[in-house]
Image (cartoon, rainbow, N blue to C red; front, side, top):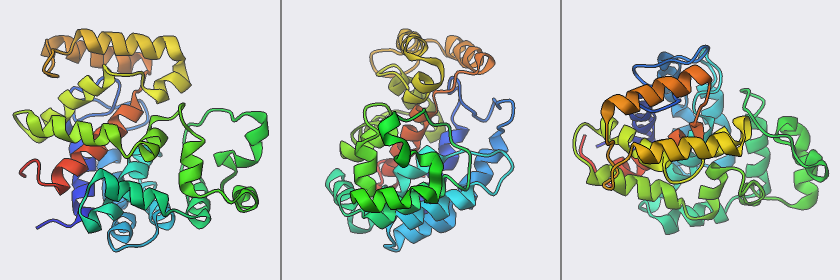
Length: 283
């Protein structure tokens, strides 16, 4: 029987193996400087941090260690957002994985967890938006330099995530009980075929639901909305792709234009973990 940390690693591997996944690295597509094998190496490298979370260690240090290991491959940031979802879910799995268990893990985070989260940004280059001037002291790019501001304001990691909503849908999961992650798990469980292919279908369906916040930050709201509309055109009522060839073309188009719905991929990785851990799928 696989451990929770092994299921999390497997979820990362299955997520990147799914294809077509418009705008993202998959087993048929690389980005210019980010390759399929970088994601495989990143998933393996994150294992020590995932094991920490599974053993009951605090979320912040577990996440920092997972990111540090992930970043040891040559591609840079492969799964930062996915790990930010997976680490609390892996820790929650110790008591049986449910939304309430995950909410309890999030609620129990501390200022020390927030400081470790900020330190994780020192291990890898992560795209972030410019903060509001009044929040400059809490800019995540300050890394450990933000520790005094976190201590002075008494901000836990959950507080930090709350301040990142609505502009970041990974943070949104932290304050909504991982709502979309659990929905994606159910969608994967209810589909047919190889799990990686189910994950790719779940990605397209999730992309059709709401603008990807990474696309919004990098390319603007109009582009993000256009991506949603195109994904919706290609998704049937049952959540499956209406035309595989058209989805392949959509995937190639987004990659060629440098439009990367990475947040949606992070959510699919979390959904895969939930499905694996709760034995909603067999593998």
